[in-house]
Amino acid sequence: MRKRLLRYLSALLVSVISTYSGMQRYALADAVDEQGCGLSDVAAWQVLLEDPQEEATPAYRQSVTEAFLKACPERPEAGSAHEIAGMAAAWAGNVDDAARHFEAMGYTTDSETLLMHAAVRFALGEDTYALKLRDEAIEHWMSRLVRYGLADVGIEETPQGELIRVRFLETNPETQVSYLWIAKPKAAAWPAALSITSERQLNALFRLRAGDEAEALRHVRLYRCRARKVLARTNEPIKEADMDAAAMAGLRAYMADPDRPEAGALNACLFDGQILPEISRTKAIPVQ
Image (tube, rainbow, N blue to C red; front, side, top):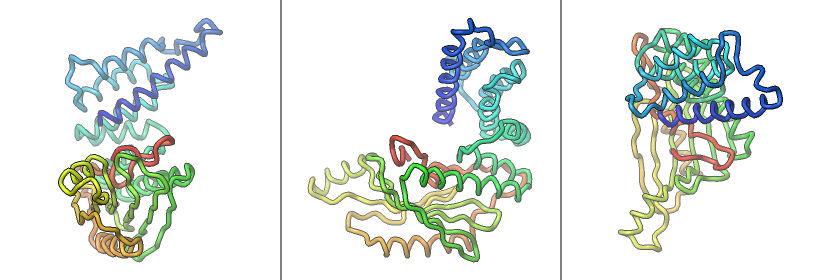
């Protein structure tokens, strides 16, 4: 959550700087809104979020963000503030507060936020709404891959749902996620993914034992929202057809009995960053 908060704060900081720079020619005439809130109020909120004297708990972040929203509801940053407050409320287990903030944040294509919003709606028993949000998270993630030209994506329809194949055309040098298969069940359930990675640090440790000439070590992992498992580890070449057949069979089995959230309890997707790895313009697949 801290990584996500820092990303929001970075975006807000850019907004503040851009707004301030653009206002110079107008002598900051529009720096204060109808509630009397200006850029100094935004900056003060950011400082509170990262106050080193406070424990950065979800409850604290929700509290200071809601105080900012109460004082400055019409600021341009309100949408991002609602997103931060919604994520914080969800992590704190405050389902109703999270739902209220997510509804107020406006349109988003962020997969992590959409999956957390889905968790909130599952907890409220709103399965249809939750499925819509879950599917939007996956669709926006795939569209970014295609738009940036980072991967080949294929979809296979099955009676239980969709199986998505992703072959990355570029890989981050640290993790080298080369293949990913995603199960998107038709049922009111979480997605799952099977990935093949070759991580720099693990390869270095492996070569200390096996020798510098050893082939790179590959890990085959299954990620569900509530659990993860290493299925295989090898430095032998793996045929793409064999990988695909095994992955698709495993995910078909998952979709026959997927992880179904239960109403009344908020259970976030803990491994959303591995099921839908973060996408960057500068790196194909940033750190998993």
